[in-house]
Length: 230
Image (cartoon, rainbow, N blue to C red; front, side):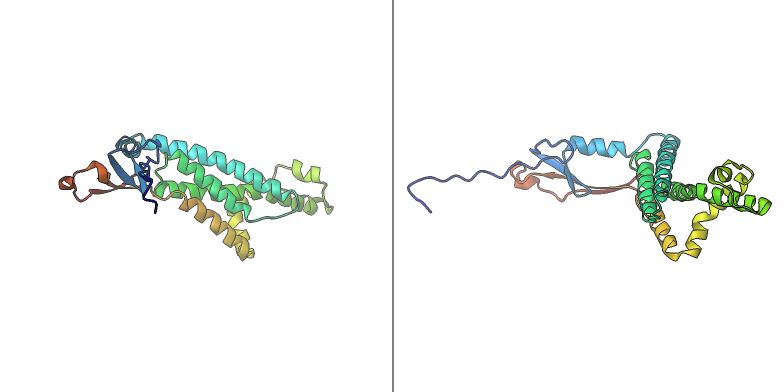
């Protein structure tokens, strides 16, 4: 320590609001373990209530269907390379689950979880549809002519579309029975879609005052609020 020269320590920087990044000078809240200024706390709380439930569900459905179609296309595209990478099904579950959650305005809930699981299942089934249709058509042509058809002939027949549709809906279950590993992967995909749409909760604690901003006589126990939304 040096006594011939004064040394000054800089005060610690003021905490900042997680949302707006402005310095918190007096009062703040803790929302799901994040520091928020009063204005941002009110904005977050207001965004999680009100609005049209039917509109949110419709938006979540549209977003989920779009993600499901994209996921099925990716899954089938990879299968055309000769590789059957079942883990892509988990990616499909993540895509659909994320899209549904975004469409729900970040609220989630049981209804959105069921929607995400259903769309993920149909997406995985849809990725198997072209192979099922081709296999059914090939078997029909072989039974009628005794000869294996060309790829063009197999894909040009439309007589097995309905049958292929029914089989496609059950395909993930049938594949899972014949291949437990694939069934387990499909289960993880459905779980991912379900997990990403759990009901959002706001755990609000406060208001708090910064130590240097509040007289000792005004210190009080913080109020805690827990708010579930959906």
